[in-house]
Image 1 (cartoon, rainbow, N blue to C red):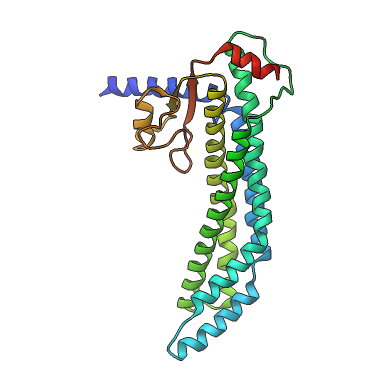
Image 2: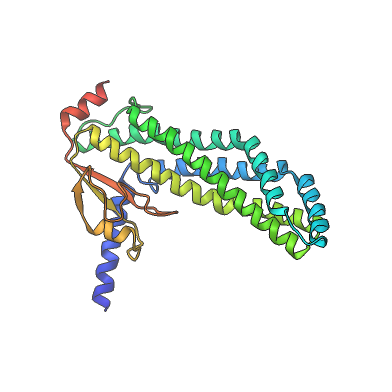
Length: 284
């Protein structure tokens, strides 16, 4: 057993060294910087929601609920959903700004970092500080599409979360002051927990797509799912166990690159680049 544990520790250490050494790893210096920026933006967004939430309208729903309940009906659910939906629609531009800035920034910075790492792998002199290359338009298209899907999904999740909280408050008859405090506390929790999850997951999603597209752009023909210390993950473990697979194939989980799940820290490595293609991209 001790031998097995020692081997596992060695494998994890080796995997970590590869993982953190990749320019597009969420745990690289660049990845952490990008995740921190997105985390800050998302935390500010959720804290801002606490200040703009329509507490007065919810109080009115609360009053109507008490009357309709006494009459044998409820209707508070639909009224609450409508209030929250309309309010989130008014705040959507703030969410879009935070998400788009985070994802597009990660695409641009990650692509340049990946090309610079390929250049160094070829034994060429490291690019100068401030080095940047034109990002593949396919990546920017992916970024815009992904950002739009993320905004829509976050709004749906936020609406359900708040509607469930309010429904429980109404059912338990906690009173308007306490219900308002519960709503504010939920936004505080979102600014910590959800902002962190979004920052890690979405930065990793983006950087992994950058690694995949950059690999294709330089002619790489293989890719590998590099896991971190979580060797027990049922999603990422089998993907990593596949080793190097054709770059256009999907991994066992059905993903073409990490993240495999929320808060996934795994990364993608590509192999077989064409030096001429690397040189051509660097020269553009």
